[in-house]
Image (cartoon, rainbow, N blue to C red):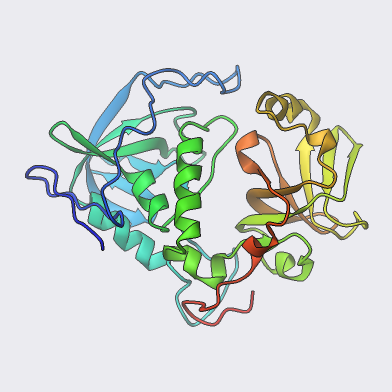
Amino acid sequence: MARICIFGLAGAACLAVGSCLPARACDLSQPETSQPETSQPETSQSETGMVASVVDGETLKLGDGRVVRLIGAKAPMPPLGWRGDDPWPFVDEAKDALARLAAGQEVELKFGGRRLDRHGYLLAQVFVVSGEKRLWLQEELVANGFARVYSFPDNRACAPELLAREAEARAKRLGLWGSSAYRIAGALDVKRLGRLTHSYQLVEGSVVAVGEGGGRLYLNFAKDWRSDFTISVERKDLSAFAAAGIDLKHLAGKRLRVRGTLAWRNGPMIEASHPEQIELLPDGSEKQVQPPSQPTGPAIAL
């Protein structure tokens, strides 16, 4: 049964099922030592503002004109170029959820990596403020199935905590995880992957072979590298995976899950630049790529 948590007079609603989630899971008081040396995260500083409007399921506009992206929590959105008569599943629901949590509220912005994206939007972990209490927006959205986890190589703070929340929401089929539009794709389903290019996806499968060439390492998921699903990793990024305990060169025969934007280069491909994109899976986890038995939302041929 859902509970509503009220924080002082501000009355910020908590979306979590069963209980409110603490906003202390991610500690940004210290610099992130796992960030690239070229990155200078300002984790010891924070900024505040008032939310004037909710742009979409992951973007806020503050009263002073600043625009903030909730880094780490990717809101639902259709594949690029998708045209359909029905709304794409959970796009509106995610925006509404964020509005219930943040509209008109005072928020604190904390930074764990690069501060601005190419549009000049702030990339922050965002906390609704009510007196001494804090409600972590990214955690609330991910934990209730209104967002999936993503990260950048120069902005990876809080990814482990958010990935844990995402796994819980996925196991319970909360929110978007109950929709066939967001089911984890199988690496051998090349036809479906082709329809999903230019969109953010989670893909699972077993690595058949590992190859190298042109300054890159390739994880191939079928025998024909010219058409199969592939993970591409630049050689300069291998050390970051090794530091996280992922030996990419010896993953043949291993099952894994990768997340990122799908491209088409001799078949579907995801470029992996940092270890938070790849999760090693136990053998026999094929059931995780099956679609929900009761798809929600419009009928979408994906």
